[in-house]
Length: 212
Image 1 (spheres, one colour):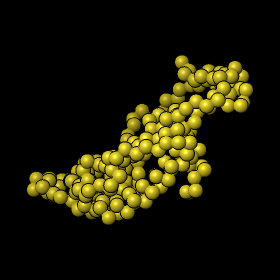
Image 2: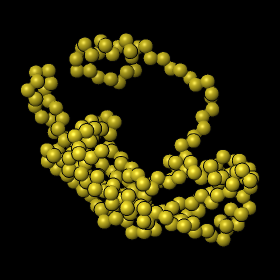
Image 3: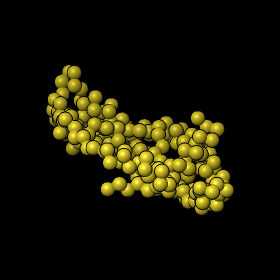
């Protein structure tokens, strides 16, 4: 069943033919293999955000109200495996209010990403910290724990580890190790209902911000 909703009847009429014409197409290859390995390790920080808005009356007869953002709340959560002390803003709730709350929030993100880039460049280079058992396990490994390929002169053995903590993760080949590169220069931002609501405000704010 279609879950779409439409304020005007003409929009519904235009939508119905497209909706009724949808068909499921099954892939020819019935096996699925996950290969987005770069997402196998968490980033140093995650910024969790939410936007609140008010309904404001408009002067347009067809549109009774419009949603206007009035506050943005966020918190920067550091990875629990960080060896170094996180930046000062970590675990601190930030709230931006007013009609310009979105521009305040975008300015904050811009400043934050500059701080995090420098912090990660200086702090996220922790060397591997083997236990005796892990060192033996790595030395005895004959194949990649990820792709299962046997080690050889062409398929080199690598000790895959977290650059945040130095924790040994697995013995893999050099190709898989490159694919699983930890995202140390990116800030992951998670919104409550981004696709269904908050994303509209963010796109407008970013489009009018002075930052590229």
